Image 1 (tube, rainbow, N blue to C red):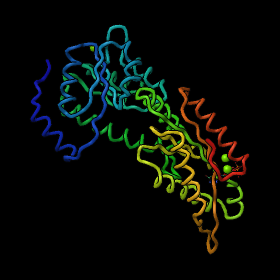
Image 2 (image 1 turned 90 degrees about the vertical axis):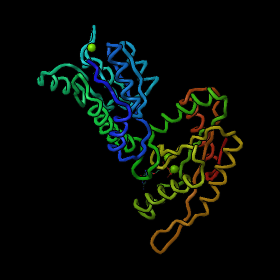
Image 3 (image 1 turned 180 degrees about the vertical axis):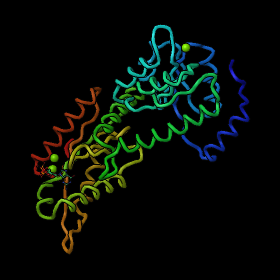
Image 4 (image 1 turned 30 degrees about the vertical axis):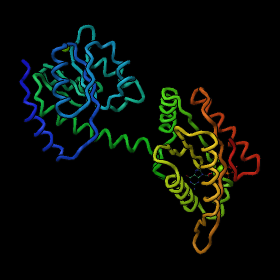
Length: 311
Ligand code: GH3
Ligand code: MG
Ligand code: MG
Ligand code: MG
């Protein structure tokens, strides 16, 4: 029933398929009520250099999504008590997994039924017994597209920084990490001063260029481990993991000063732009509470006359 896998041969095939390029292993979640089938899938996926997570009980799906955060999901069509399509619907209800590729797996050979299953939230349909090469090729195709789509979805197109939603997602992740590792964590909010005036005086395209200039500036001056997001129009958010409050304040003050000295070109004229900043050090609170405190600190900087950092 289960075709024998020759690991050596399989890996050779996969290397040809991926042109020897090393890709970050795809995280694949498999749900199949047959333990033997699930184990077999696990073997195939691992031999192909993927990270597999196997579940046999449909009730575990929500927990598995949370814990494993899969990039691709393989679902058995028929399980006791529920169908793969029902599970797909549950998966699709989660914002984060709204467009994760779902591959159905079944002995179902009726094409009409296959197409019906695909219309209900699936992306591919593979029939059992599975051809490992076909399975791996399908995962690679779906995975590559999913990753490039995701890369677009998490970024802001003007600046290339992380967008609002992803910045908050990263903040939640960093809070978990700070708690686990018992490390300090700082969150900073930046808002450009009198930006409306920049637009009014020099025009919107020049305003856009200032936003890109500040983005570049932040990227150059912050560490690789810091996360920079465009929080709103002319607001930026910075997550500084493993950073003490006084260090965060020093770094941002330095950046603030250097940026204010930067000459912004506008045709044959030049002008200067400043920003205000508010920092909050994580205090075992929720990300929302942390953001609110950073926002209040930013407001205090504005009240204080702008072009300054408040901790
Ligand atoms: P303050 O010092 O109090 O922050 O004053 P401000 O003028 O910066 O604040 P306000 O929030 O009143 O104005 C923000 C302006 O930012 C208004 C909006 O037109 C402009 N803006 C927001 N997004 C963009 C964008 O993507 N491009 C450009 N060019 N301007 C933007
Ligand atoms: Mg089954
Ligand atoms: Mg603003
Ligand atoms: Mg502003």
